[in-house]
Length: 359
Length: 132
Image 1: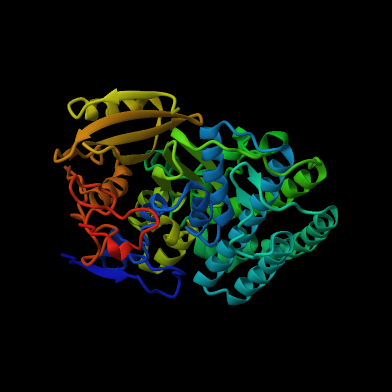
Image 2: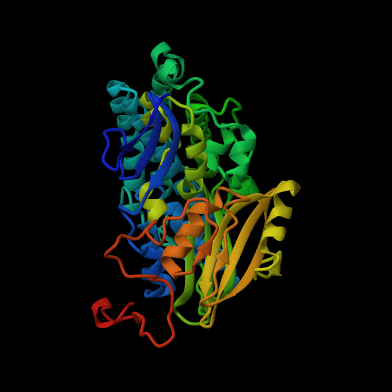
């Protein structure tokens, strides 16, 4: 009779960019179940947010994550604006979309690059990250920062972008698209790559829904869910639809991200083509009072902010539910029954962000 | 300002939650808010991008029945609430016993405003306050 073995996967592991441990219960080489162990990078940001005023919180919560930082501050700002009855000007809404989609592109390039690294294709990893640098340069040119943009604020954005710079972003996108056209067939069609991803880590649609999967993880299992379709910021003026695949495996999750990369290219172009002139923020004198829930679509999926104000500068409660937090139960379902050698690729295929998860 | 909120109690929590899933709702998350004498526990569900919420008022010191037996996805957020607020969640399918996010040397229940204990105040250095 076979005896189960428990081995620790992480917290430090070559395929993991951030620390998380999975205690894998193995029957020989097959995973029977997995127990997540987190807490290595918990920073207590929700507690710290209670000690900063609601304007400072805009920049604090941007530091929850280095990949989707702008979308954190955007979701938070939308919640506070909802509480205070503010409507940011149209130009600010379009700039918010442009920076959100640039973030999505650099996040998806980072994720697909890490995936390539996880299955041993280092050259592809470097090519994808080289392309990502163009996006980082575009963010630096338009905001002055590569990671923590610091441009989103309550009532709009802090910084305008000139027509000249918007044209330079369009030029950058031409370069990015050309490079994507070269790299993506390798990622999607290479025999060895498909061997590592097709049929691996399958997440059934029903299980994905029951376990609360979000973002590309949910969409790759056939769930057509993308909060951008609800029209927050300027998405209501743009053509956006969920990118859905149905196989639910690592390959499907990668394919969703590849399609979303092209979708983001298109959305930035649409936004730059339609962006109106005008002010970039609205002044306000009120303080947040009441409670709201604000949601947006991050590169990894739905992020939720619960905010409770009391009419003072300080919030009573700021709660964040990040997409990777929601994707932990689904990944446990993916791991059950897989081969030990596939664990790294499966975990990376959900594009986990542990800093987001633990805050 | 949150729409679609239904107040529930500890007694009917499991029945109410069980009634959501057959209707096609997706479990989104839970939120715990310290309201002084009690906690507000909010359960968020989504269907077609519309949130539907339950609000449970839990007296401090009372335990909260886990819904992880009905919705496995709830186990992570229930363990987090147990860590950060010191709410005892009973019936968890996987109980980290207060050590899900927090290490052994971390402050206990850091988000719980315990009556009689001075919490960290805005503008003051954290080491000046006593956090238990």
